Amino acid sequence: MPLGTVYGHRRYLSPVKSFALSLAAVGIAASVALAGSPSRAAVPSCAERFPEATWRTESVGPISIESSALTQALADRFVGEIDLAAGWILDEIGPFEVTVCLVGVESTFDRTRWVSGSQRFHAYMDMDSRLFAVNTDRTGFVGPASAWALAHHALWQHGVEGGNPEPISSVIAHWYRARLLDRLDLYHVDVMVDNFFDTEAVISWTADRQTPTLEWDPETNFTAIGDFIDFAVAQHGTEVLLESDPRRWSDIEAEWRVALRADLTGRTTPTTGWIAGVSIALAIVLVALVAAAAGIYSKRRRRRRPPTGEAIPGFFSE
Image 1 (tube, rainbow, N blue to C red):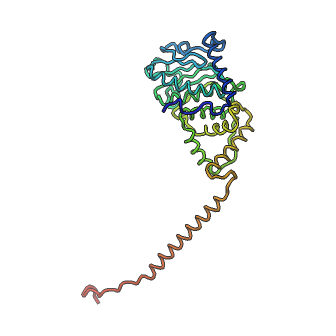
Image 2 (cartoon, rainbow, N blue to C red; image 1 turned 60 degrees about the vertical axis):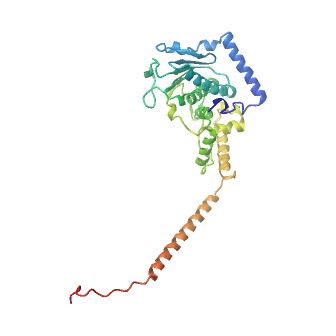
Image 3 (cartoon, rainbow, N blue to C red; image 1 turned 90 degrees about the vertical axis):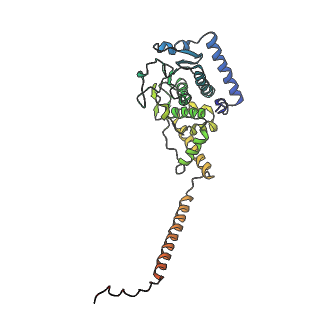
């Protein structure tokens, strides 16, 4: 699937904001390319961090990408996916910096430093060091994992001191992952069905904080909750992505659940009619079963007993 057409990253932006953010992006890229950036100087490259491996520079800028032991074609694929996700995040959250290290199958990168899931290296990020490293053994998980990690980095750099609230930060990251996979429509169907019986806000969106480091397995990092952020942004704009007030998120969750019910049933008010409907249906089925059982019993009683034949001579003794 052509990733460039998956999801319009300016869907939620006004023309004025889109233009302003574009100018900001151009300015940031130009300043980095021409004069360098003080903050970039503090972000080491993959080659500096992991000298045991050989690295090739794939992209230079606020999002710096290096690869180890990858063919150029495969590296270009990953760079395209990362650039697509980074473009959305830049427009919708704001400028951020991170060094991305793509580790190929034959790389001499020391995989034993981080293990997760099946006790092997999958993906790792360090928000304080502005680092994201990912194993590219499973090519289909690299782009989605990158979108998830880059969103966390951006939220960390734009959020409050000590980390952005959780689980909302991870849910926002799942929204970007779902967009890269073009699965938001599918996920919307999933959450509509799951929400049939509940329309009240139940999630404590700011109960925790992001952790500065994380090792995880992108192959098990799947959830449909990104649909919540899709609704929140569509209704309240991209500014909500940096919202840290738990009451605001709970209010949006309640709106979202009512909207899910409306999409599924065609009504916005909580419906209890299904209880009466199910009761009537069960009563009809029960009456039908009783009638069928009575009919069978009556039929068996009316059935005439066949006449008994003559005894076989000599079979019985007197």
